[in-house]
Length: 295
Image (cartoon, rainbow, N blue to C red; front, side, top):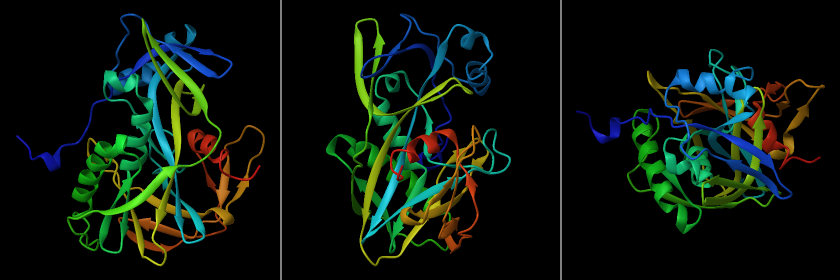
């Protein structure tokens, strides 16, 4: 027995599929009776770039997330999670908030997956209220689920004082170039669009969205990490970068690095960041940054 507020979503639900490039984007074809992978060991197997599924040219599906651009007055900023040094992959790298599918239906609705995963792991406190993103009516159920999870986490930080009532902030999809993807299972076809990130090193496909969140001018804003693991809260550092201050460093096939941070939040406590420090970025973050940073 447990209380609802203590529940942690531990399940992953993945498959493999054939990926084909089309004139407008991609077509992902699932088998009639697809293989389903639900454990960490399964995930490792289908993410092996030299494994049996890679040899059959199959890709891991589904995953998604979002890069959120925070607009406050005339300034746009990013709040990026810094993966811990002992993370299973890309330790010490900045990343956007993303994750894996947890149900069969999310294979066919990667946009919902991207928004859920992209918004639930970084919480925003405006004044003394936890923010709830007002994106579109179709995503309101996701927004409330995210709010309830984040409210539970906020109460574990004694120095973060929030009330039960949410603070509504307007959010909208950021205008950028996107690709189309069709997910096909027999006669069922689901069509979506976003930034499609292919990672040959993990045989993974991510559908990414970019969302702009409009914060009230002059308000104090706090960020904190809400990602959970089997052993408890991950509590990653959240690093804030004003867009106009970001500088990039890319050498050959090496990962993208960025500097220009202004503030760092840990457990909801903010402190000045080292603006000269270059942080390495995960492949999904690099893919999304290309869509919003100057060429």
